[in-house]
Length: 190
Picture 1 (cartoon, rainbow, N blue to C red):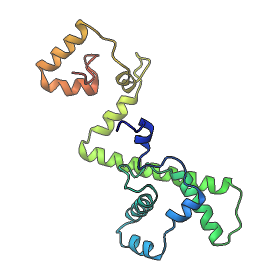
Picture 2: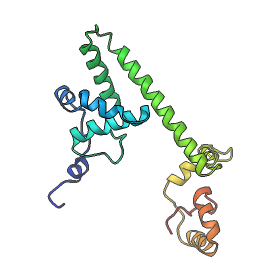
Picture 3: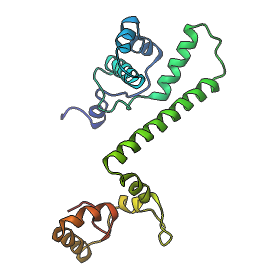
Picture 4: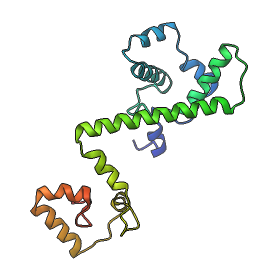
């Protein structure tokens, strides 16, 4: 779109800033009908995901490609404070709900890590160990293999040509070069 800036295009249908209190009350309040609809879902994580998408589609106007693109900590904090007020609970110091939100966030991150690790192990039993190995810094080097792979290649000319030829000559080796880094410059640019 020629008339939109890159920022406008990127902002379309996504959370740009934290919702205001009136927006939270208007778009994120779940009435009895909403809660009955959410209760039809099988597990807690399905119910949570459905509720997040329901509120997101109301506020943003569409479903997010990545449901985690929600300002979680702030939204959770605001929801907790709203719950306390609705139930006429004397508000504690701000650090109390902030700590609770932080704890919940850490638990959610840990669950996500475990879920991804299990899925990776099911896909390829060696994959988690291979990924951890990418993070280790060998004694004879100053950076990890992952960091080396992230940096732009500096090989030019003959060295890069040799790596390309080696990968082209042996297709079974090509994938190993990309993951393990045998050959230096082979980083998926061929």
